[in-house]
Length: 270
Image (cartoon, rainbow, N blue to C red; front, side):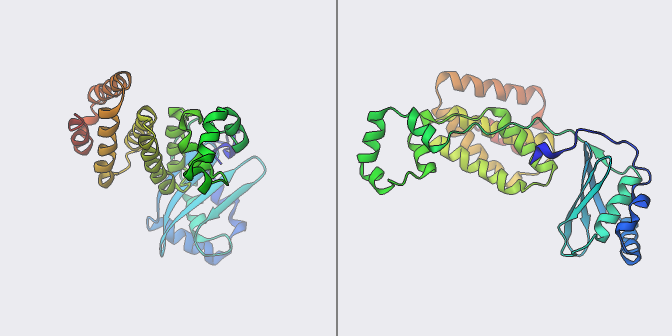
């Protein structure tokens, strides 16, 4: 996914629309120019040699342009089946250097075990007790999610950067961000259910940091996020409480309290 960003960089895009006009018929070029000059290209982000743009047409669309030495790849999620006006409008924006440059975070692979690897790590007596229980007999097919929750202490944990980097990159690449974002809330609940409050806090922290760093509006989600933070803080061990307290102090020091919703979430933690 995120590894596909080109390593090689090309910095001269001053003729990119002109050089690639042969990919479009004249009608599409005219409509692309109209789209561009009417302000239809609202946001372009450069990520190495990949450009991702938001373009307004009859609906909101996402355009991706990938450039290497010998080819250009364009895609748009509009229903038009050929190279479209949104792509040409994006090329005009790139040609006129109307883009922001961002750097993706390092790709962090998921630290995960296969089913057979997890079973080998679980002590035989614990596994036997689970299989012979009513709950175990009902799920003898070994549903992986259930097994991971039941034997949470044997499941490898993801590091903080796994959550932060993947959420950060997903937003910049428009890569199913909302599904990933809300899956983090499910992860937080899972770790609270298994009394792993430090891991739950790590995900909460990642959500706060990514949405702050990229200025993403999550006003409606602060109450739920605040509730999870309070649970993690109140039920955590003394060591984890100190970690959470240190993080809250860093929020104050870095003036995150400029966000009144975040401030409200934090001040009610006790």
